[in-house]
Amino acid sequence: VQVTNEVQASTGNDAGTVRVGLLGCGNVGGALVEILDREGDTIARHLGVRLVITRVAVRSISNARVEAVGAGRLTRDAHGVVVDPDVDVVVELIGGIEPARELIAAALRAGKPVVTGNKELLAIYGGELFALAEQSGQALLFEAAVAGAIPLIRALAVSLAGEPIMRVMGIVNGTTNFILSQMSEERITYTEALGEAQRLGFAERDPSADVEGFDASAKAAILASLAFNADVVAGDVYREGIDKIELSDIDFARRLGYEVKLLAVAERVSDPTACETEIAVRVHPAMLPAEHPLAGVRGPFNAVFIEGAHAGELMLYGRGAGGVPTASAVLGDLIEVASSLTSGASPRPIHRDSVAIRPIDELLTQYYVTLDVADRPGVLAAVATAFGAHSVSIRSMEQVGLGDEARLVFITHVAKEADLQATLAELGRLDAVRRIGGLLRVIGVER
Ligand SMILES: NC(=O)c1ccc[n+]([C@@H]2O[C@H](COP(=O)([O-])OP(=O)(O)OC[C@H]3O[C@@H](n4cnc5c(N)ncnc54)[C@H](OP(=O)(O)O)[C@@H]3O)[C@@H](O)[C@H]2O)c1
Image 1 (tube, rainbow, N blue to C red):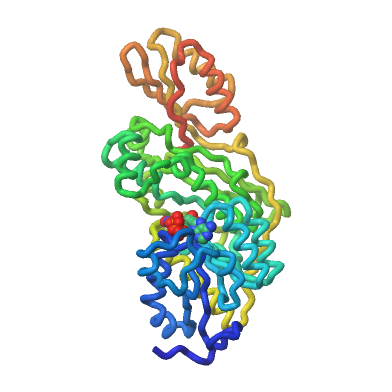
Image 2: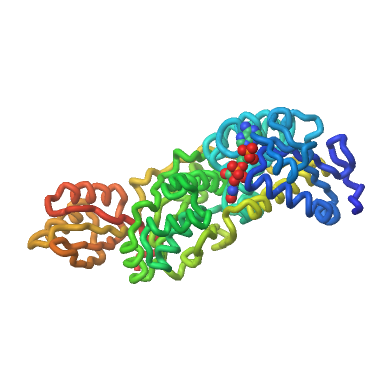
């Protein structure tokens, strides 16, 4: 296969060849090795850049791995790969904080561009690492960190770079979307749906990072940073998971024309022309109108709905995880890095301002709330008084009998989160209230 020779790699290596040092060869790294070994020639023919994985660092070297990757490129010395003069680009697919953070920093300091899929790391240390990338004049690309195969980061960072983004709202965790879809479609409980997700390999044995919303909040921080050129870390994101959702909540939502989804929301709450940008970032399950494009995203799929002041509404949809789909996103970044190495182009600029983050207490939305109460006279009046005392106005109420108890299901008018929380605290103190059940925020215009 002929490699275009006009392009001269700035690497002192063969013209048009970019040598990749891969850190981690698990689900994603292994898939990247396979794809590049198989399709490297085609990529070289089409793009004039040959990507060659020359070194692969792993924790353990088994016979099967030697067979898959080749003994010559395998090593246990990840740092050695980073500083190897025969490596032009470093791909970090180890995951977690250390040693990934130190290895990425070392690569940037050594003047090498880096591609990573590590959302956990970027959501905490993104500010520090991007500053280092800027200082070193090197690219730090991370398409695989949010929504797997979906070219979402490039869309926000490049195609929509000049767009005043108003809101990014997404289903960015396939595990929880699979569980909620199963509950809704198969009418099974949360525990049954989680078991099914684990059986099919969509959920880990310890599912807490997914079901408690940690994974989605790391992604929300990254999306907010990009959409609003802001320094947002995972700790800035308000987070609730799906582990308290009951089948009855989903049934009730469906009856009213809603689907329950775990949403990551990053929105501008200040005017786009204001000097100071104020944003809100949160992850929580929500009732989404069935006609909303995100409501139809089922199973393990991801989708992100972007609202721009000029572009209007856009939606990107696809596979959010899996070794091969995620490796496709890594490959896109690698090609971008390799093209700029061979052409001498500067990396994408990274610009981050500090922004104000509006606390969840100030959120204005409608709420769905369920209460299990003693079924006796006067209870309803006491409950209604608690709502009224905190200026939360009830839009609709339904009562379902449960033996000597009753379940009250409320949808409120638009209310402030702090007022709703104060209402729940007061309700919790009422003798007749046995349990406060589901709490869901309702997305969309009040209807
Ligand atoms: N899997 C997905 O669907 C997905 C989707 C989006 C983003 N990501 C991100 O992509 C990254 C990789 O995920 P993955 O699923 O491929 O992980 P994985 O299957 O657990 O693979 C991790 C790899 O890193 C290696 N490793 C661990 N510690 C090391 C060290 N100190 N030095 C050298 N190698 C080391 C492991 O080696 P051994 O094999 O020898 O233990 C393994 O090959 C993570 O940041 C993840 O969040 C993954």
